[in-house]
Length: 190
Image (tube, rainbow, N blue to C red; front, side, top):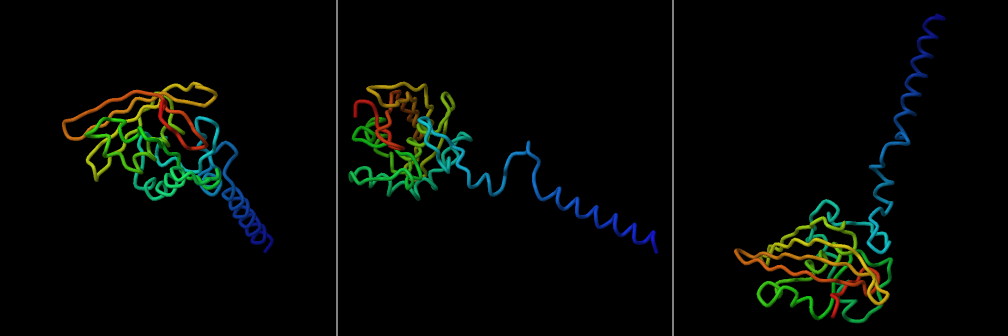
């Protein structure tokens, strides 16, 4: 009877210790669950924390997800409505010159989701790392490479190199975009 009690006690303790050990990840392991989802880890070029990267960190831009949120952001910015930092979910590029960014043929195809991708790449993209996306409606594929940063008249700015391709037509532009406010970028000279 004593042996049975000892075997049962050891079995219960083993299961209890195993259950506790499985409940918490080791200190060196990265968080993949609640902590990762609820800890904004995408830090923008100017230090702003973003909860979503829309796949920019992996070298692409999810324009469908950006398109779902960016229309209101651009409308608010263009309408001169106040937009709080807490409510902004994606960075955007705005301004009169954006439509003419790539010339008359391809530049007119730039829509709100493309503007969102452009702005978010400027905000959180790594310098020198291309980010690509395609607009199935216009048939244009984009590749944006954010460059080095610098201050222009006290505003944080980044250089960029943009390539847009539709069929056999490819247009390339290089320039500088500056942050007008948190998450709002405009082309230098706009």
